[in-house]
Length: 237
Image (cartoon, rainbow, N blue to C red):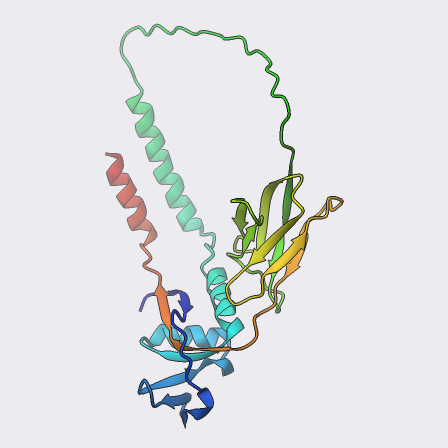
């Protein structure tokens, strides 16, 4: 079965968990006639291993778990350095360079004309000054939160944290606040400190409560590395 990219509950179930019939690994829902697996007692790795082997599952989660599991999956999917891949990439890049050099060979005399224009300094008048804000977003367990949205309220300016939870955003100097959002977590409103010379360290808290329903699993359709480069090589010719 293909690796998991993310899990979610698109349409949460509102049936009362306490009124369901206890069964192994969860409870049986008499309304939908399905077993609802209790994932609140499982670790991130146990949840991921479960969905690696199972499909079409109803589950019960603590509200923060989905964000934590998807965070874990995002970190697992971070590309790892491979000497074999680097060597193969270097060999193919060298082949492209040789092909391009051969294609650039010409016969005969080439006349080259150049023109030089004098660049005049222009007055731009009043310009908007910008500052760069940067920082790191962590969850309750002090783990990075990749994919958290950094946004300037009332504008189209924004950015997302990388796999290490880091972000950087250029903003007008008159902006005073920015927000940090992530599914399953409380939105944080951060005041911009003009005297801050370093990075913002932002902690996010999970929303309280529990979530249940049919679990949607997005799986990764990965193409082998050698096939990807062979496809690019064929397109070059």
